[in-house]
Image 1 (cartoon, rainbow, N blue to C red):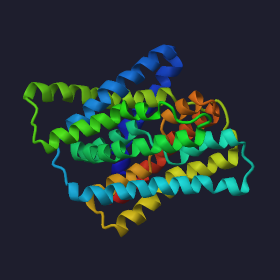
Image 2 (image 1 turned 60 degrees about the horizontal axis):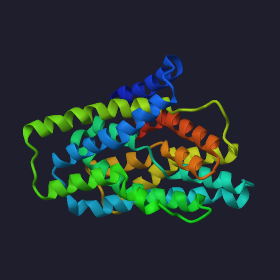
Image 3 (image 1 turned 135 degrees about the vertical axis):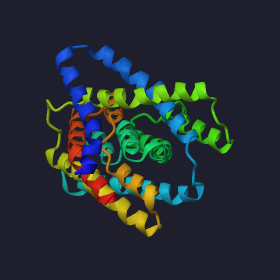
Length: 298
């Protein structure tokens, strides 16, 4: 119960985003601008601020990342399984498949910060920074029709990757930002959590149904239930414990990324089914994430 109450403010911000989008009629252009502000400015500041201020245990990074990648690989394998016994249109399948392993970075960093503070954000930032390129590569490969032109440029410009990389470089160099710089980054970091979660809520869409209902239900179960179990098993086997173990299991339990919809639309996929899945996993995670967190922190 205490863990659920800890996460309540984050989920309340998501629901606030739903309400603002529905009743204030600010328009798609407004929300697109807020999304860009959070993604390109505020979240990188959050990552840099947290990583620079945290002592890093690089010896534990390899098993941590191995566990995160194992969870993603489990999602990919389980996402492939229904193709054997379900009739699913190829483009719909390719669009929805990415929902089995992609993750919402906004919720990831918000939950890690709420439960574990700056060390949690730094640990989650390391996972996110390493996992984003893999998730994008696999998703684009599944949806590709004319090659992956421009993919590497897109990955190189990803602000979550360079924000994480810059933070780690400064940390390893022993750089301590002057007090005014720390305060500046801190203000941006504080704004990133609230605005990021509000934009997650504003993007929710449940006014349609997934293209293939059986496949959609399967993917929801994979993302919110099966992947955390994979992370629990692999992390235990690799000897993870404490903060790293808790954070990587919560990473595996995250709902699907909002960017999955953008990619599906850009590549001519089934964006409506993906939007439904993003919304369903986000709302479902309001129940499952507190349960996983409560189990880890018991």
